[in-house]
Image (cartoon, rainbow, N blue to C red; front, side):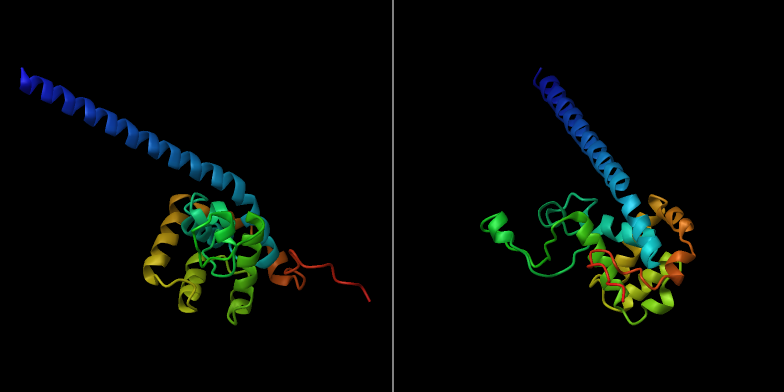
Length: 191
């Protein structure tokens, strides 16, 4: 009789744990889908303006922000792991962070492409839809301390969600435009 009770409890506990794990996977997938729905258009728009592949922008954001579920993404609107000033101690007393705080999620995306545009290799890369080349250049210039593991993770995200398909819409506007970096800047006065 004791063995039967023990067996029933074990089976019951295992079933409950399995259901909890499966529901968590469903939540993660829902989170990823809503993140993609929200930020695909943003990434494509920034690609058209800057010549940086949308797959690179979105793939890095998904990795660095945990598809928007990380503390940095939720509290600081930082989707790229960019270091800088914040007021985390005022938002959550007793907590500190080295990551930059943004007013909006969009501001984080805009700042990310501005940082890439300042790299000395940007001119030769602008308009190149090959995400692997972009990731290697970024890694070589020290974007991530994780090195080749970081490239592998971002590449896996890009391939898993077929983000490379977004790069097919890259057109000549980004490669020929001289006024692409105007997002968030005051309008230039015509003289």
